[in-house]
Image (cartoon, rainbow, N blue to C red; front, top):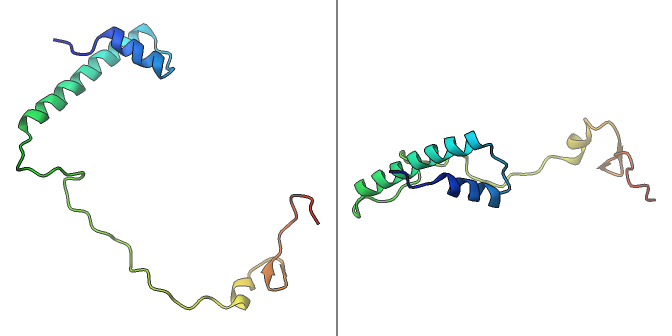
Length: 98
């Protein structure tokens, strides 16, 4: 028994401004029907004592701790710059301002 009709798919596609051919409407109606049935089947199995999860495996942070360190010396930073002026990077002017 289909829970999502062709007309519903066409209506949602029109609301989303998606132009679907008739064969695409038919295909999507069938695919969305399978998705709805799968969600319903999972909902039957889910119980109150099973906590909701966003991922099947526990995730851990793989980043290092954010520890402040001494900054680089200005001379070291500007050593590789093609141009510098007054201790800063010099770049081409792009806005035509003075």
